[in-house]
Amino acid sequence: MKTIAELQEATLRERAEEEQVYRDLLYFYGAQRALDKLDALATDLDPKNETDLLVFELFQGTEANALVPLLKADADPWVRYSLLKALLKNNAFEQAMGLWKKSLQWQNPDLLLANTLIQYALIQGHFDEANQILPSSRKLAPDQPELDEWQSQVSARSASTRELQLDPMPSQSKVAFVLATQGAAPYLEQTLGGIIAQNHPLSDVVIVDNGAMDGLADLQQQYPFRLVKPEDGALPADVEADFLATVPPSSAPALDYVQQFLLALENGPENIGRASGRIEDFYQDSPGDHWRVMRMTVAMPETRCVGPEVPACGANFRPREGSAGSTDLYLPEAVACGLRQDTLDSAMTAFWKEQLPARMDKGDFKNGTALVGSFNQHLERTIGFINDDVDGGRSSLVFPDFLFLFHAVAMDAQFAVAQGLFDAGTAAYIQQQVIQSIKELDREYKRDLVKKVRDGLNEHLVQSTEVPDMAPEVTQALDTFVKDLHALYNGVNQDLYLAIFG
Image (cartoon, rainbow, N blue to C red; front, side, top):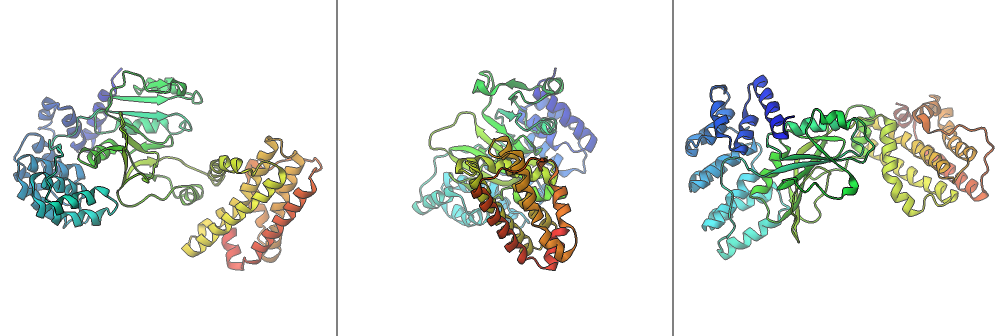
C-alpha cells in the first residue's frame, strides 16, 4: 500500500493534470526538495498560468527581482511571502520594501509580508523603516503583543537577535494529523480525503478509535492511517512530527490547511503552543443548518490575535513538543470546512445535549420541581432568540426559535423518564400541558400552530395512558410556567404569529 505522502502525490498530480494548475504539486515537491520532479514538470506547465511559472522559476533559483513584476494582487499568500524571503535572503532590502509598498495597494494587504519585513529590519538595524511598517501591521491586526515589543526595540534602537527563516522553498516541517472517531462516522471519509489533498507532505495520520465506529478496517484499505485506543494515552512512539494537526470530527481541512499554519508560524510569534483557525460551515441553507449556524456556531474573531484568550475552535495545529509559558495564535482565515448537516430536530437535540452536563451540575435534574422550574431557562432563551430574529429581520428563524422552547421541554421530560425522575404518565402530561398552552394563540389566529409544533417534536413525545403521579409542588411549578407562557403569548401580534407559523 502507498504511504500517506505517496497517496498525496498521486492525488495532487491527478488534480493538477485535470485542472492544468500545478501550483500545489510544485509546492509539494518543493517541500520534499524533489528537484528532479520539479524539473520534470517544466514541460507540463501552461505558459499562460503566471502563478505556476512564478513558483517554478522561484524554485529554480531565478533572480527574485526579475520575478516581482509577475506578482499580481490575487497571488496567494505563500507566493508573496516566498518572493519576499528570496529578496531578503539576497539582502535586497530596498526591493523588499518596494514589494511591501506594492502590497498596500492591493485590496487585501498582507500581514505576513509586513511582520516578516519588520523583523528583518530590526535585525539589520533599519529602525526607521521598521517604524514605518508597524502602523500597517497594527491596523491589519491590533491584537498582536509582539508589536509592542518591536516598537520598544525601535524606540531603543536595539537590534533584534532573532534568526529568520529566509529559504524561499517551502518548509520541510514534518506534520502528522491526529483525528478522533467520536461522532465522525458520517464524515470521516471526507475528512481523510481533505487530508490526502494537502499540498504539504505528511508524515503520518493517526486516528484515536473509541470503538463506536464501524467501517474503519474498510477505510484503512483506502487510506494509510494508524489506529490507537483512547486508553493508550499517547501517540505511537514512532510517529515522526514537528507539528500535530487536528480538525473536529464533523469537518474536513481546507486544501491549504497545513500550509496556512506553517506560513503563520515559520517567522511568526515566538513560543507558540497552539494555533487555531476558523471553521466555516459548508451547509447553511436548510432550516436545520441555518438554525445550527446561528444558535450553535461560536462567532470567531475576524482578525488575527495572539495570547492566552485565543479561541480554540477545534481546528488546531501545535508543536509536537510544547514549551513552558507558551502562548496561542488564532488565524481568522477559514482553515477547515464543517460538513455537518442537520434537520431542525437534530440541531435542537444537539443543542440540548450540549447544555445537559452544565445543567446536571447546576441541579436542574435533582428533582421534579427543580426540573420544571428550569423550563424558564428555555423560555428566556426563546424570547431572546425571537427578539434577535425580529431586530435582525430573520423571519425564517422565528418558527425554529419558537419550536426550540417546546423541543427543550419535551427532551427534558423524556430524559426525566430515563433517569427515573418522572413516570411516563407525568412526563406525557407535562409535555401535553405545555403544548396545549399554544391553543390560546390558535383560537385568536386560527392557523393550528399546536399541530405544527407537535409535528416538529418527532420521537420526543412520551406516549402513555398512565395517570400522572405528580407531587403538589411539581404541579404548582408547572402551573406557574404555563402562566409565564401565556404572558409570552400576550406579546404576540398577528404579524409575529404569522412569522411563527411560517
